Image 1 (spheres, rainbow, N blue to C red):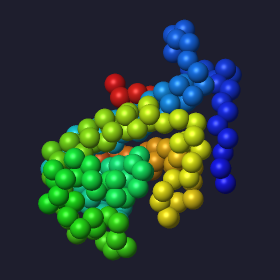
Image 2 (image 1 turned 180 degrees about the vertical axis):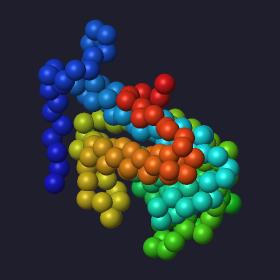
Image 3 (image 1 turned 135 degrees about the horizontal axis):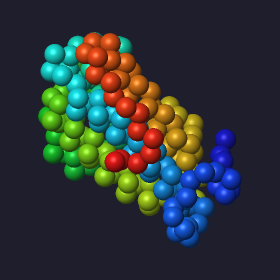
Image 4 (image 1 turned 60 degrees about the horizontal axis):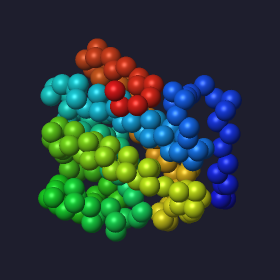
Length: 192
């Protein structure tokens, strides 16, 4: 099912301080702000995770594997397809870490990830996401995403991707709270 992107945002409570923007620009800014908020929440979990639980359990993976999984699929879903993903400079510069792309396999992850790499991956995703969303058009947002396992438009895929980021950030928040009494706040909008 394809959606026709016609937005009437006049009844919603956000504004951009009297900047005149088209509905498309407002939509893209809203999506960027929500990606940033979800990613910032995840980033805060990673940054504040003590070494004592970095390799400990977090749902079905370790904490570091869960953080990697979340960023990996956020990276996948902002891209055009899997081949484009593998050709990104960040992936080519870290080929030993991405190795066989085990995240794409139907098996339990084996790799473990260092915190500085995960934080760098989050920053890579933040920059990529901002560029990708800013470059979207009504035509690209209404086009079908090129992932055989998801029958979504690009517009819906962005919302799905934000929900995925939030889902895993919430799991990591719970793990931090239960194991260390560290409380990570929920980011409402934007990166800061």
